Every structure is written in structure tokens, then in C-alpha cells.
Length: 152
Image 1 (spheres, helix red, strand yellow):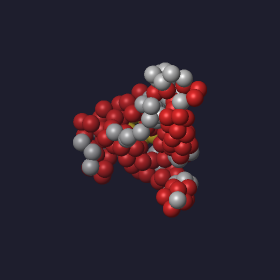
Image 2 (cartoon, rainbow, N blue to C red; image 1 turned 90 degrees about the vertical axis):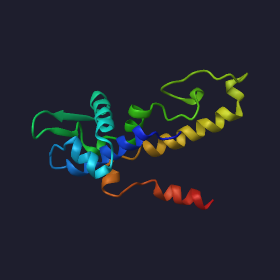
Image 3 (cartoon, rainbow, N blue to C red; image 1 turned 60 degrees about the horizontal axis):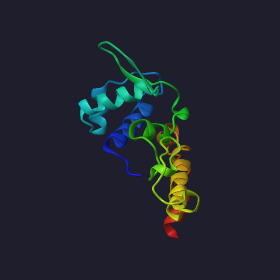
């Protein structure tokens, strides 16, 4: 899995919203774009996708902008990435959202599929258990696991 610019910018924008809208404030696209160094036009497209996906809401007018549609503790990084970049699976035959059969002779005995299934599960486990609130409050719970894995 490779995170696209759209996915990266979307995550950064959502973390920014979670940081600045905790008290119910509405944040303008321009403010997010300036703080996160994201092109405004690209951010508009990303936030529209987030709004259509039910993760953010917007308010029109001079003091309008965006805010989270639900509490930051209920929005996972996995939800955001899937909404913007699609499935987390490195190959389609292990995807839960966009499964497509592979060209190998027997999926049930395919060694590559087995390994990629484990990769997909590891990625999903981390991203689906990390919320915006965890990131904003500096509590990503899987950092210990990652540090232990990198020492191996």
C-alpha cells in the first residue's frame, strides 16, 4: 500500500480539523491549507469527498468552513484512507472491499496471496485502531509494536 498525496493531505487536514474544532469551531479551507501547506483547490476536492463520505460537515457564509461530522474518537485513519485512496490491500485478491480473483492457479495455496493477506491485515489493524483523537492527543498505541518490529 502506498499513500497518495490525496490520502496524505486528507489525513493532515482531518488531524488539523480534529485539533482546531474540539470546541465546536468551524475552520476555513484557507486556514487549513495555510497551516498544512496544502494547495487550496486540491483541499477543496479532498474535503468534498470527506463530506460526501460523512466524515465532515460544512457551514456556508462569511464565517463558514468545515468541522468533523462526528467526534474525533470515532473517526479512524483507516476510514479516511479508504475513502480517499480505496482499499488497503496491496493486491486485489486479498481486499475485503474490492476483491478480484488473481491469476494464480489456486488461491487457496498461493504463497504470495498468503503473505499479502498478512500484510493487509497488519496495515488494517493499525489504521483501524488509530483514531484522529489518538493522533491529536499524541497517543498512537501501535508505536510500540512498530518500534519492536524495527528492532527485529
